[in-house]
Amino acid sequence: MSKVDEIFRKLVRFKNGITANYMRDNGIFYERSYGVPIINIKRIATEYYPNHELAKALFLRKEREMKIAATFIDNPDEIICEQIDEWSKSFFNTEITEKVCCNLFYKTQFAAQKIEEWNVSDNKFLLQASWNLFSKISDMDFVKSFLSKTAKPNFEFSNVQFAAIQALISVSNNDEKVKKNVLTYANDLLKSTNSNTKFVGDEVLAFLDC
Image (cartoon, rainbow, N blue to C red; front, side):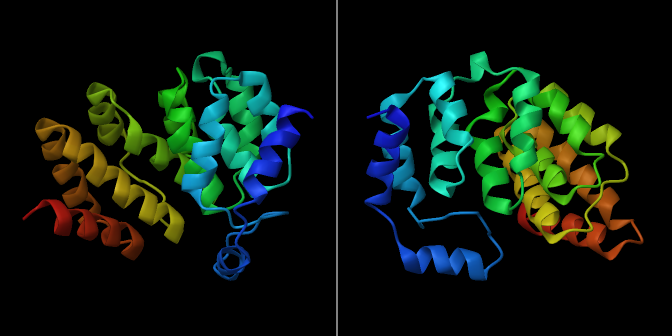
């Protein structure tokens, strides 16, 4: 039995039809989903870490669980930019976008590059991915630089709003000096005539400026 088949058999033991239906009803669509909890996917997947080739084989599968397992198995040091571009084509719902970015892509040498590239995209999942990566970034100089350059963010989509709010709060918790930059950025968002932009700024300030 191949490792791919072995992992699949282990995962489907934890299938949950109620969870799968709930996700589908809430707009999280996959070609196939067994509703396996993330904690079970991670526990099984980490038994095989690191395995770059196995991760690539898993991500090619149609099942939600196999794609997410790949994010726990891949070796970020072996990932090239072309793989990131290829996998990002599978950003078709909020969950897979977040899991790929927050479990794996932020650990690669291309994280900062993709934050800037995706943040000017018209695709709502690439926009979300930019903020998902930003939430995990550890280079505080990059954080401050990015905020100073992102004067007109695109917050037209609710998934992007949520990801941005979470990301701005997250980086603020990492560094007190960065928090001041985030507060300035959030106040600037409030000056916008766009209601979605103002909403993001207001939510960040409500959490941080207390």
